[in-house]
Length: 407
Image (cartoon, rainbow, N blue to C red; front, side, top):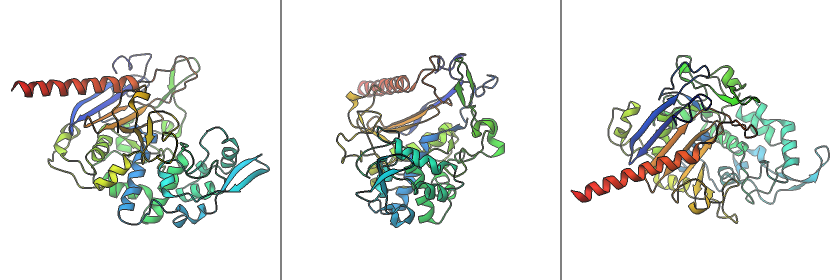
């Protein structure tokens, strides 16, 4: 990380690793700002983009536990505007050929990205064009997002393929609102962020904390880093979307997200809060339960058994649970991992992984939107990060075992 954040590379990074529920590595590297005048802080705030999806999925599963959502039910039970789905079968945007979907979209389909929304896959162009015509992302709230999305046809029949796209998760966020009777941000705050003491996580950053937000960079055509021209960089701390985006709208910190990830690793509650002393935790013992153990087990289990092969579109060795990828064949992955490892990255170079076999949570937060077409774009770090992190964890475990044997 020191090498990667030297001048000419990324601005800065924060790394946090937990083993057996205790922080064993927590460092900030490089700078927070493009001018490289301010050192990166361990409590820096990052836009975590798609790491928000796991949080949204956890909220849905809380409501399922309470009997307010049936994940096998058609989503039209809760959101009638998504009834009677049509699938794009050909033609043009001006004269599309459509056929009725063979089955209704279920909540499970939304959780597993198998609802059939356009997702950039071969054959999706027509459905994508028709979706763009109504532009759900221009909506002012989640209700408007779903209403606009409902006007466009699907790209595939629900349950027939994995197609990663934010639309499914935005629908889940709206589902939380309708079922709970709370605004999505209010629900997350009351039922996840406050119980887990995730004080710096939300869809906007208070004015008194905005000095901690890491600059968001991308690579200019000349190969040098520049500030991204997005609303959240022009006004750091402002909402990333007009609506509370469950698919990618959250800001967070390493400590906050580590609490959330450790809760999942521990089966729905942090087993011992004293492991978070470096995050300012002064309490010992377990934290409050936010999910049942069987619910977390379902989230972390591959849910794509209906597909052949049961994997997502980006990696032949990974299936998908509720809100993140699940390693099912480590031999087919370029990045080292244990069977059952769960996690997901964010668009701006953030990543996390929960490794149940190693009893480890590993988080690396950077703030750069890649441009793969630019030769001088900083190299991806996740493979090296996990390789080195797990090598260190395994070495520490071996040393501990040897020490115990010697005694």
